[in-house]
Length: 118
Image 1: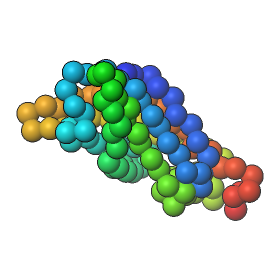
Image 2: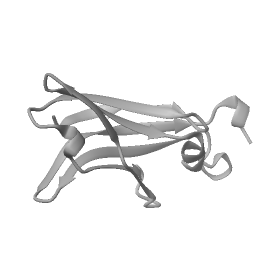
Image 3: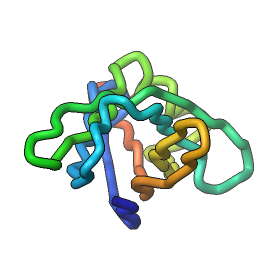
């Protein structure tokens, strides 16, 4: 699959979902998957890890879903120290024993909505 350059933007305090569609002849529900979100600027190396879910496959087509809850997205941006928005990089890897394969990567901008300005 190895999809790169995907942009995934969402608001602080939002339930967020990233869906990636891929094609493979094996059943991805048997894979061990990892999702990592890391601060882009490198000044503070905050890394968050989550476990994606898989739906499918149907005729070899599957969907990887990454869900972040409202509580998780609230942690990603502190408007008092970070300002209005903060950029992250993310990647999804297949991490089975003997199979370390990047499936997708991209950037994320988390912005602060007006209703959560303080």
